[in-house]
Image (cartoon, rainbow, N blue to C red; front, side, top):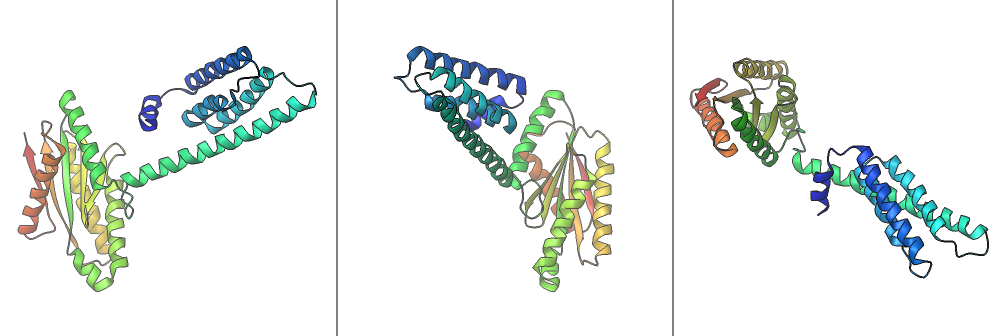
Length: 277
């Protein structure tokens, strides 16, 4: 429920969130005044605070902590001693601040965990599941806009030799290097994912004739870095150039994967393109 509401509220301005929070606080304060001191509305004052803190900046949430404490004080005038409302307002303000702080920490933790679920822990690239999901979204968009796509599949040749001869730590360095090189050779709008083990995939959107240039550069840069490190590896790459949007992400990846294996069967460390209509 919270995730769905967060998606709906994504992109809403701080002004909109402030307006909704203010209206909610005003309604609660009005109901509190109308019903008198016999009915408690204490827990309801948390609603505008939690809403604003979650969907806007934490500082705005702190402002609503203060406003909620003041509104509660104005609604609660059942004391004979003038000092008591001031004391209660201070205590309530501190309690509200604590709730807002916990909401902020929960929000940060949720974002971190969500990112961890999407990202490969070693290379910081998209993991296979997220990559497939985003590729499917791009395919559907390309189908509507009648745009071309290019999907490349990369496999590190002789990667096992690195682990066996140089150790797994050096193997991890190789994978990190591949991920970094792929990311540096493409635009931020393109997709790069680690599909598992020593296999990677890259999706270029709206490429037209530029896809070959990009993938040629990727293959060249990978070899340059591997040569500089004296790693006994190569890179087999298959690139499917889709003039029209493919049927699905799985279908597109399968086509590029088959092209990559054709490179391996032909001697490895090469690049093969195929135009798919």
